[in-house]
Every structure is written in C-alpha cells, then in structure tokens.
Amino acid sequence: MLKKIISGGQTGADLAALDVAIKFGFEHGGWIPQGRLTEAGPLPLRYRLKETQSASYPERTRRNIMDSDATLIVARGELTGGTLLTRKIAVDAGRPLCLIDLSSIEDFEGAMVVHGFLFDHRIEVLNVAGPRASHDPGIYDDVKIILEAMLYMIYLEHYEQELKEGGIDFSGQELTAIAYTTPDTMITEIEERLSLRQKAAIARLDSSRIWALYFSMLDFVTAVLGLTPDIMDNREQKLGMADYLKLDAPTIEDMVMELVKRLKQKLENEYNLKVIR
Image (cartoon, rainbow, N blue to C red):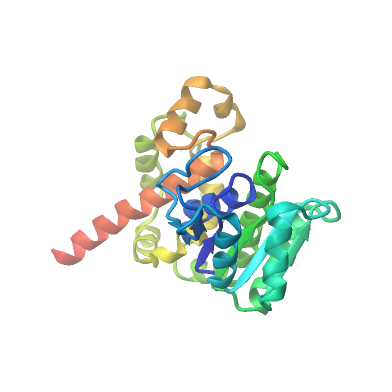
C-alpha cells in the first residue's frame, strides 16, 4: 500500500505530487538541488525535501529514483529535458517505471493505469516526475487529478466497505444544508449531525487512513455545509478559505479535506479525554 510520495520539488508535476501527499496525509519528501532550486525560486520550507550537496538537477533526479520503489512520469507527448533524463536513469537502473502520456490517454484512464501499477509492484514509496509548469502549464492539474482519482479507486476497492462496517457510513443520512459560515463553526455543525457511533469510529480510525475518511465523508460534508462553486465566486469567502488552508487557490475539495482533518483531531481529543476519565 502506498505510504509516501516523493519528487524533486520543481513546479508542475513535481509540486502537484507533493501537494496531493500533503492534502491526503501521506508522508512526502525527496531530494532537491542545493538552495531548494525551482524555476519559481526556492521551494517553501513546508515541503520536506532534502537538499543535495550541489545545484545539479541530475543528482537529485537519480537520488529520487533510487530512494523510491518506483517512478511515475506524467507527461504530454515526446519527453524532453529532465523528464527524459528521469526515464533514462530509471530504465538504466532497472527500476520500475510507469509512463502516462496524456497525448494518448485521458486523466481518468491514466489513474487506472497508475492504480494497477502500484498494486502490481507493491509500491510503498512513489517518485513522481514530469514537465515543469513553464513547459506544460496544465500538467499540475493533470497530475493532481490522476493521483486523487487513483486514491479514490484504492478507497473503493479496499476501504469503503471496511469503513462502513466500522461505523463510518453516511448513506441514507439526512442532509440539511446550512448557510456558509466560518470554518471553525462548520466543524461544530458537522459534529452535531454525527451519531455517537460515527464519532467514536472516526476518533478511533488510524490517522494514516485520513484520506479514506475524506472520500467517505466528501458528499456528506459538501451537502451539509452547502459548499457549492458559488462560494468560490465570492471574493471574501475565497480569501477566507485561502487564509485558513494556507493555499493560494483552494478548491472545495481542499476545504473538505481540511475540515475532515480538524474534525478527526477534535473527536480524537474528546474521545481520549473520556477514556482518561
């Protein structure tokens, strides 16, 4: 089962992979050239990458390939530059390699390929590479969609039924929407609509499965809180979400993930306090 996602920290494909890992609670990391070099300037410190001893991109590329169980390349058409080098190093080293060419397949089909690749090779640490943003402006969104869809497939196949049997089931539950409020108030509103069994199950769920909890609660939270695309058109609310999530351009799904994380932490604290008493 996938446990960690790494990359070289460059804009575009690399950064999308790291952002998905952080969003869904997976470990992340990788090697980056000395000075945390990217085409957009030094990579922010919130990304936990290690610096190589030189500013050489090939060195960090080789280290990421060798420090992972397999490498995923997402690109569009003929490979060039660092992406081409990534494939060469992986092939020469005999490391498992999955290449998604978006000029010939769609994102969802790519996610299916990646899903099969992960389980065929029993990947725990995945290195993700591809074009930088200046070479392919759309690659960030494509990589994010592919990885998130792949995780959803894993959830449906391996975790959905398990979570339901454990008490985390929202099918058939009444969904009365409230007016958009502050994020902290939203957490309280969600909690008030949970049964005692649901609260206990969420509190006891292993934190490494927070991403599966997200998929289980996505429709429920979105409906209860009335999170619609209209919210993203409201400048004040969008800025509030951006500040809350520490993201430049948050989506509704980003908001739901953060609310689920904070709800789980709140329920864990309440559950542990009751156990101590």
